[in-house]
Image 1 (cartoon, rainbow, N blue to C red):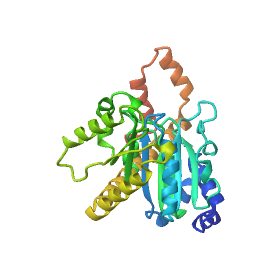
Image 2: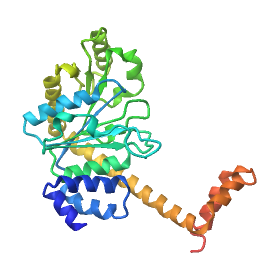
Image 3: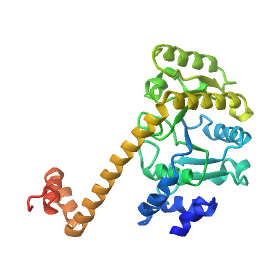
Image 4: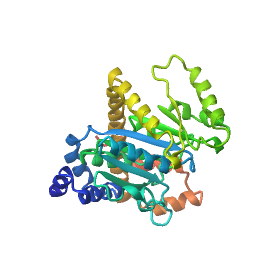
Length: 317
């Protein structure tokens, strides 16, 4: 495994792909691998791209990659897709998107499934970001599966978050009221050649005017991704937001909050894993589930008894 880490740090693409697969499959050696690469992380700038299905996120990312490469930046892309109920993998694969960049050695594209995560990002996605960071990518782009009231995980992961809306997406005010207003650093009105684009931009700006005391006012950028219109302006807005984050000290604060949250989540994950390992070792869960199904026992007292069985409360100490 040490060789795999060394190859990753030396820019080996196969090593990066292999490490992400190990992370995604929750390999037993994952924690050791992540511990080895962690000192080499913290250099990449993470950009999240989220929006409703059909808003043109993939084509937007495709053109954005061209802008990034024009500035000689190396890029990692994680396209978070719905998880297949059959294979457990991503339903859409990176081979059917962003074909123009497949041969570019400075762009690494990977599709990952949500694995049932309500927020649209799984823990494995955040760990894959660390792999690409250690791999030496300057920018990491995360394209999420879609937006909704539960799909705000991206703001906890990205340094800059782009929310993509379309004029054909219905009442934009309703979309904003669904919590999107709080997560966007930049609003992108894609497919702005369609009727209603101007109205959508106006409504967003009116909502932003109501929060005039905010230190950063998200710009509203019209784009037509299929025609490469507005992409240069979008990249400039991302650069402006990054400059604001760095100069204001907000980037350090955001990353500190992120580390604190990741530490809490990791402790919770380890505790849960430890408890369930003990429970499965000492208790026949199928029998207990059968009793609950037959109404011979309720799930609430059963859960308490499970914890007592493994001495969770420390009564024997």
